[in-house]
Amino acid sequence: MAPPPERGTFKFDKYQLVMIVLRESGYPLTEHAPAPMPRDWLEAVHAPEYVEQVFTQTVPREKERRIGFPVTQRISSRVQHTNGGTYLAARLAMQHGYAANSAAGSHHALHDTGAGYCVFNDLAVTSNRLIAEGNARRILIVDLDVHQGDGTASLTAGREDIFTLSLHAEKNFPARKARSSLDVPLPDGLDDDGYMAALEKQLPPVISQFAPDLVLYQAGVDPHEGDRLGRLALTSEGLARRDRYVVRQARQRGLPIASALGGGYGTDQREVASRHANSMIAMARENALFPVPVSETAAKEVTLS
Image 1 (cartoon, helix red, strand yellow):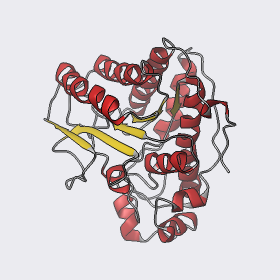
Image 2 (tube, one colour):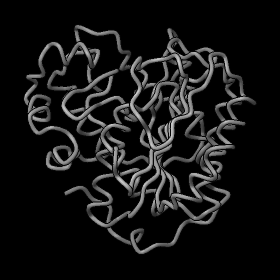
Image 3 (tube, one colour):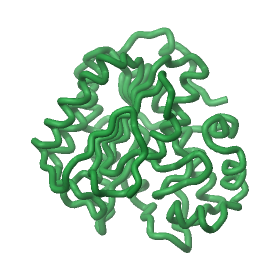
Image 4 (cartoon, helix red, strand yellow):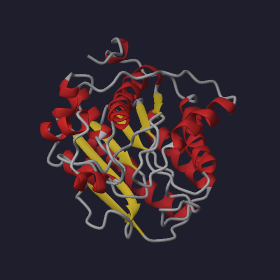
């Protein structure tokens, strides 16, 4: 846990609260502590100059304003580990069908700057690395945060081996959207049934036509009706329906799926943390209904080097 920076409005305490809620839930968990994402893996996606700024805590003030908080030494260390966590979750999913990163989902980070509370883009970096090392051939990134995954879309644009699907509130941040492989803008106030209708229309054909061998899922809970920065109206049960459906679509095809936390905002941080924890438990329960995938990559040692 990084202490809150002196500047900025982002509430970092939700991450610790997520783990507390998970541990108190009684659901059986296996916890893994990730190693930091190696620098050269980050530089394969982000501008080396920007990576250097984060590592040395010399991020220019204009970039820090765009991120939403200053990049201190503790924040620098934290984002290296949270990026490593998404990679680790993906490798663990290859062994167990599903695994979750209890942080990250930093889909606004761009090539040479962070943005929207995101420093490095763990979804793009993990995808690039898994493909480069031969642990995946084609990766589908499903982004169901209430905000469009503009950074992920721009960092993977033009790649035939990474597909980005984003369902997001049309009128929400960012004002200037990037172009995902498939964007599904949603109207303000969309409820559970309307949201599921859109997801059920788009996700199955994308999986069938793109034929990924791994799914990365940005499972933001900010589409919730009570979210401070959301514009949609999903109930808690609606979020659970969404999460179970995404996992089911992957696992019934024998695909491993790894989730990252994504957005969730409110004045009651315990309540927000509970939404995230319930999301991960719903996905784990759905995964338990399917046999563990058997693949050549699953037998490989999970490590960062």
